[in-house]
Amino acid sequence: MQPGTGHLVDIAKLCESKNEDEIEAIKEELAEKGYEEVPESHVEASRRKLSGKSEAYVSLTSGGKLSKWAAEKRKEKRQRYKDKLGVKECNRRREARRRRSEAKRAD
Image 1: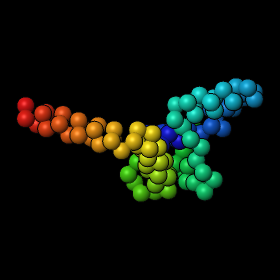
Image 2 (image 1 turned 90 degrees about the vertical axis):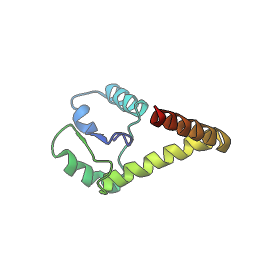
Image 3 (image 1 turned 60 degrees about the vertical axis):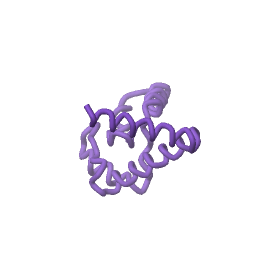
């Protein structure tokens, strides 16, 4: 699943009739695009959501198991980004966004 968009894919269906190298390539490609493996505790919920299809979208705000997990992942990603930038840079960017927003409203 890609936590940012809620896009859920069935890796088993994507990898049907593929050899080991092709399967690894598919998994690497998905990882590069931001997809993460759904935890074991959420596999049943993901199967229900897919209901036999190869892909589906999970609501990011529904409050279900998958949407809560995705929200947690997005929060972790934001925190890693903030830690990387540092507090001063985050505050500077927030202030710049605020100014742009105010300028748009003034127009």
